[in-house]
Amino acid sequence: MVLYGDSHIAMWFKALDEIAIRSHWKLVLLSKGACPAGFVSTFRTTAGVGWRACNQWRRSAIARINRIDPALLLISQAFVRWPNTVSPSPALWGRGVNELLSAIHAPRAQKVFIGTIPSVYGPVCLYQHMSHVQSCSVSPRSRLTPYSQAESQAAQASGARYIDVTPWFCARRCSGIIGDYDVYFNEGHVALPYTRFLEGVLADAIGLQPHRS
Image: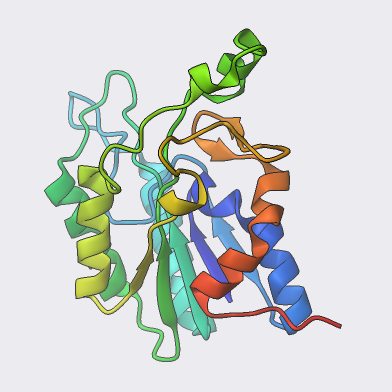
């Protein structure tokens, strides 16, 4: 099993590692923070300069995926608007997914995208509203943002599965507290204990149930 993407694949590592260990699977993590998995750069400045390190790492990572030819390839990435940069449109974001999957020549690999988590106000808001934490919850609005929707459509059109994780975080509202868990590490990443709490649904979603002793 190979995990590929930015910090949004890395944040699932512990839960996926435990699933892999119990299932006796080898796991390889290929992750670079703030570097999208797809063939697109959110670091292109108004002067037209791209983030070279991200592009180089992406080519290297894809070459390694092709050499490994994993049985399962899990991909995740987050769309982030960075200051003083030119952001791609949803259409370009989806095209980047198509180009990524076209570049992966691993005939055994089942390709699965883990969708972006819903964004909330995060731990800072909870600290500021300890007596009324639901002040920090937000509406799920549409289940998929335009970028997530473009990503989902491109992935499925290229033969990959797409997991919408919104139901794992939202009912009527998306909350920073679920049960006894602080859900978010920050506004854009899941806290480690909650990823481990989600091991069962995550294993079901990727089609790899851990063998339990």
